[in-house]
Amino acid sequence: MRDFSTDHRWLSINTATVRRQRGEPWPLPKILDACAARGIRAVAPWRDQVAAAGLGATAAQVKALGLELSGYCRGGMFTYTDDASRQSVRDDNRRALDEACTLNAPCLVLVVGGLPGALAGTPAHRDIALARSQVGEGIAWLLEEARTRRMPLAIEPLHPMYAADRACINTLAQALDLCDALDPAGSGSLGVAVDAYHVWWDPQLEAQIARAGARRLLAFHVCDWLVPTTDLLEDRGMMGDGVIDLPRLRGWVEAAGYAGCSEVEIFSRANWWQRDGGEVLDTCIERHRRSV
Amino acid sequence: MRDFSTDHRWLSINTATVRRQRGEPWPLPKILDACAARGIRAVAPWRDQVAAAGLGATAAQVKALGLELSGYCRGGMFTYTDDASRQSVRDDNRRALDEACTLNAPCLVLVVGGLPGALAGTPAHRDIALARSQVGEGIAWLLEEARTRRMPLAIEPLHPMYAADRACINTLAQALDLCDALDPAGSGSLGVAVDAYHVWWDPQLEAQIARAGARRLLAFHVCDWLVPTTDLLEDRGMMGDGVIDLPRLRGWVEAAGYAGCSEVEIFSRANWWQRDGGEVLDTCIERHRRSV
Image (cartoon, rainbow over all chains, first blue to last red; front, side, top):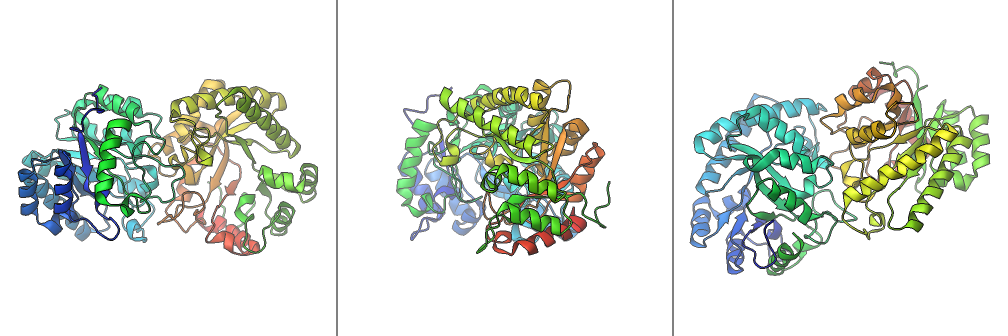
């Protein structure tokens, strides 16, 4: 297992971590500058942040700063209610792929979607099996587009508490079953993003990480599960402040052959988003060395 | 599949559903009277409510009203940090068993516990595998006591969002693996409580319910998953108000041989606990007929 304690060359910052600082929301160019100034070598930006900053300008800034991406957030949201919404989803995912290529991302991360309409509070139906079927169909379609562009797709299983509204793929086993069905050869074009927050509880986790292996492990995300957790979405913890045994989990991922970044992604309305972004980044570096 | 639309003979009320009504907290004797007055035949009371009302008095009232229990809430919380806390847990579970016998419950429901100390906000460690091992050990011990008393134990897998602080058994597969290890013969002394709220998202659910079969299916609980869900514990929905396909789930349970009650358990700080208890019970009856 790699020693993270003496440098942070394998740290990546998901830019949502410092996007909503109180009083001074950080736009993407500022986040990229602040990361580079601290010797952080990798980032994972969100599409809306890139759109606000401009795709070309972001690509140029990333290059000029010597940064890399650990992934691009995000494609997915495949579930639909009619032909028009299906087409709209496909068009949007095609654009996400093109952006990922422009930014030279190593993969496009997929949050696959839940019951259509649920995120807006108006679920169109209760058939999660149908949603899962549409997700499989959507990824099968996108995979063809992705292969043409040589852009790997990383399915991110989300915690089961997001099954209704954000992602109906909720375990690593389920994501890998889909990978095996759609890419049986393990070509490297389809894999998973393992986010500790979403999967730490899974009794099958160690076995499924081993099953994934290096060809399927495209990204590794960290933050921490707080006790108590006071919000389903925006109360994620800084590494070391919660109950996830992150070094053990990273050990499993690395034993399976993963040698990429450890990407910090923290949504924290009441704590980290209330602090100065520089303090948050400094804390990420310190905790990456000590608690991951 | 049984027709629930014309009567509510298979409805049970978990007494937490009407325990915290604003302005007029309902004590257990009042809850039992209100259920019986509506032709509700079964209840599942909590230990603290029984203690407040008196065990003997509760048993007498249940009998006088012609009520049955669909389960007794609850034993478990098996994880510990030292010999003294382990002994304390065992003593407490033995008392729970005795109470369940006095009340003529069909099973003692087990919420197995998470990381020790986590529920109080001070987890003693991050080793969920150790917690799971202690749970297995605790249930193995309790099973001997339970067999002596002929009181079945029902392991309730809780939603993964409770893995840290309430229960580190989080899927039906995991609960059934434990049943198979501790009671390979399927004697009827060890099984599961399937709560729709906790398991609805599980892609393995249908298969695991079939695997459980009638010998292991000791209880079936319903409420609904709301979108959005605003609290991890106390924002559960009335049946029909959320996204769980309850009739489909009940169909699977009944196809596996379950023929017992459908127990309503709703923790709802901002909605149902704010209403008159009689209105809540009437709504449970109506939704039991229409949405379960």
